Amino acid sequence: LLTNFGSYNSGVSLEGNATITQSRCRRRDEPDGVLLVADGTFNLSGQPCNFTRQIKLAHDGCCIQGEDMIKAEHGHDETGIREICFAISETSQCYLSTDKQSVLIVTSQQQGWRFRIFGMDISVELASITTQRHPSPMMRHMIFCRRSNIQRQSDFRAIWQLVLEDLE
Image 1 (cartoon, rainbow, N blue to C red):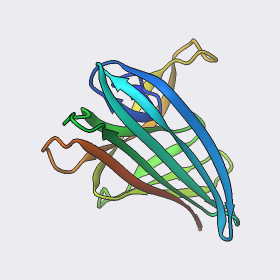
Image 2: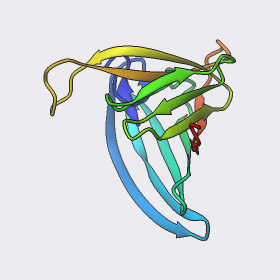
Image 3: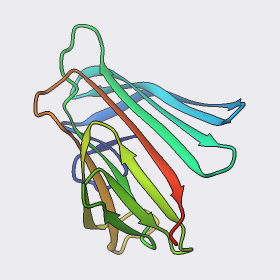
């Protein structure tokens, strides 16, 4: 969930250095799908914050819903959240909709997934990234989601979804 700005990994972009101090992951079966929750605390440039990521997977595999939240602990007024970004597989293609409200992700198996995030501006960029597994640079689409308002806020919340879409 967390990444320093500019590292081109999926996660929330932060101003400053983040150190996770504790985290936990849970899974819960629900009637309409599976809920995965990761939460914990981290220090951002010495400021304590809490994070939660919830991902709900529908039983039919056609819908993934997510929510990312970061809150500054009491007495602190700023998390420094710039944006949230999603790194897309290097074998997939991304197409920003004409209204810039969603992104169509087409996988190498020709599956279409419609990505939406609510209350944020979306852009798609091609980035050269390296990972521990792939030390040689590779090109990868990144979906950047930025707060629509420019006012800084203490809490960050992003609600997003991926829905399988018929490409025909």
